[in-house]
Image (spheres, rainbow, N blue to C red):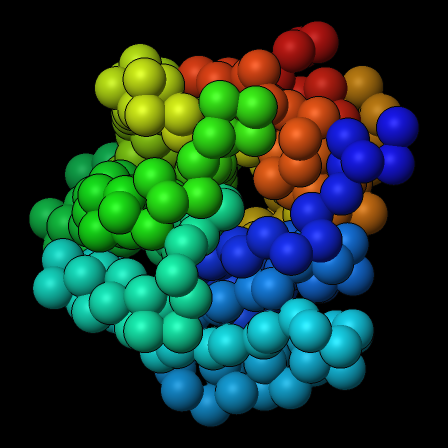
Length: 260
């Protein structure tokens, strides 16, 4: 049973890994034995998160942080090249970098669409294609390489806030997950998505202050998410236990999308 959830020796890349959900998943994967590469736009945030994660690592685990602006396709390739300079293969890619935008319907700006779609929908596609050679080197039939896209409960149901581009981008990412799962299955690469509900992250802080009671009332479990609610799912999707799962969108939302 222990081997089913063992990620010791695996190399995992996590975009948007310096805070919030990304950093939470990185902590869990490091504690489970994986070598982790995190990335975000800000170099100082990268170094701060790398230092924190390094304190959790055991001998032989590599913790690397590489700044990159993944809304730019060329930076996706630069990040992949930098990862390849340090690791000969990648066992799992977590596409977590994202942005949100809120504005009334009549005032929603075009740049609120461009920023969100570039980072939430296009970047996961380009990161996946850029890292394909390293993912294929790690992939076997018994233990495929993994791509895990971080979607959202807002891509599964109509959200209570006006975040039009965000909700649309996450719904698109969920379907892109299924499309890529079909394309990459023959290469022994699984592609799945996590659709988190409300978690107490920096991105969600303002929304939870004003709408937290609405989210909690909608959840069958009556609360927002905790760190441990995500770490177990992240380790599961990177571990041998999930080897026969692909094209799935897993809600981690306390029942918001499944029981309302």
